[in-house]
Length: 234
Image (cartoon, rainbow, N blue to C red; front, side, top):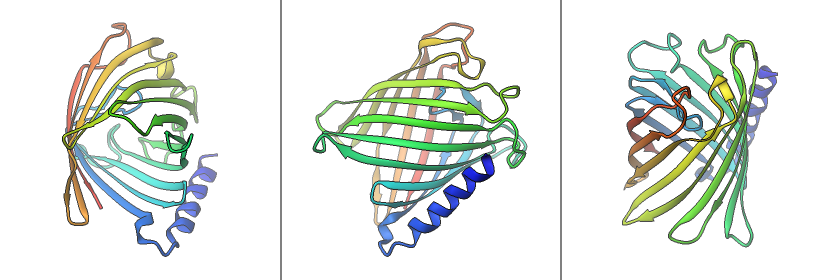
């Protein structure tokens, strides 16, 4: 199953990349002070990491490869080592009032290439496009490759986005149904993300700070965190 998923993503990426429009290819590299799961909210690695992504898109369809490398322990020696392969469909609906995104991703977790303990993830999200305050909701369904090693489950996030004086703000609440062995919680944590994109020719720098507060049970897996990052997009 995991090998077929990788082949589909790679073939789709190659097919999309053959478009004559150079704007269809994009790249990202990011330094983060720690690796906090964007979906789960738990700290996967509490030391700096470098993450990168290459994305190919054509119309509403896209495919990408994303990777994470711990800066101290070295590649494939700690939980921050990871490669993700994803495909998705994103499109505006309701006459441009909102955007819907459906994405499948295969998480090749540490040890990368071992083919056990990995995760298949299906994400569906809906985001308002207009207004000063734009609500959004996302639901992730995680299916484990080996349930005896890593449990699956569902995560959800509800929040609002806004842009004020060049800063992009996101305030959200996240919860889960007991996924990955955590305590089931309708709301497990709150998160505030502040970004300030800075254009420099064809490159965009995006400094970011993410503040997270656990509001759930003490038996949950969510941590109070402050994570800083610097992203370079081109």
